[in-house]
Length: 291
Image (tube, rainbow, N blue to C red; front, top):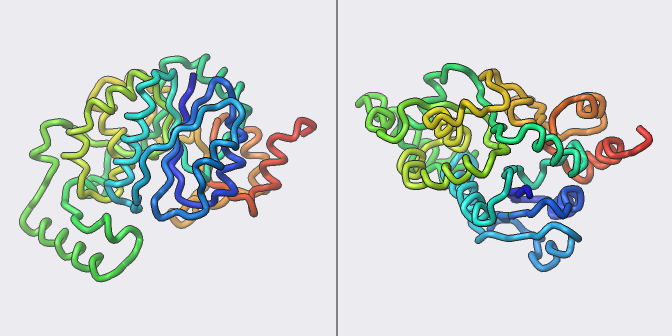
C-alpha cells in the first residue's frame, strides 16, 4: 500500500482530476487543505474516489518559506505512518502522475527500500546555509510579500550577521546541512524516523526561511539513510525524487502540451505544475492509449 500526502492551497477543479488519476485499491490519500483556500467541501471531495480512502488532517494557514510548510508535512507523515505504508509520496494539489497508478506501484516495488529525495549540490552554499543560520521571526507573516515586516526582518538578519549569530554552531542534532526539492517519496522506515525527530526539527527549522527545502535532506545526511538513496549523486536530478519540474525565473512553469514529448519519454513518475485550463490537453495526450 502507498500513501499520497497532498498539500492543497488552490484549484479544487484540478484536485478532482488528480484524485481520480491516483484512485487505486493500493493507494490511500491524506490531504491538507490550506485554511486560506476556498471552494473545497470535504464531504464532496471524498466522493471523488472509488477505491482510495481519503483522510483529511486539521487545516491551518501555510505561508511560503515559513515553518508552517514543514509543520504540515510533518502532520501528514505523522497521521499516515499509523497505517504503515510501503511508500509515502508528498505532492502538491497541482502535481500530477505521469504514469498509471499500477505502473507507479510496480516501479517502487522494483526499487523497494530506496529513498527518492533530491539533493541540489554536494556542497551547500553559504547563501543557502544562511536560511537556517539566522532567525527570520516574521516569515510566517511575510511569505513572498515585500512589506514593512520584510524590511524589518532584513534589518534583523543584517544585525545577526554583524554580531556573528549562527544557529547552526549550537545545533547538536545535525552536524551538517543539505538541501533540495521538498517533494519526496520515502519508505516507512524513513517516515517513522523523520517523525521521531519532530522536536529537533522544530528547534532547528522554526523561524528559518525556506527550511522545507532543507529539513528532510539534512535529516537524511545525518542519519545513514543517504546509503539508501535511489540516486546517489547530489546533482539536482529530476530522477532523484522522480519528479519533473520546468523552472523559469525561480518559479515552476505550468506544463502544457509543448512538454508532452519530454514527459512521455522521461523516467519520472510525477511532474508539476498543472492546472485544468492550461494542462487539460497535455493530460489527455499523456494517457491516450493510442499515442
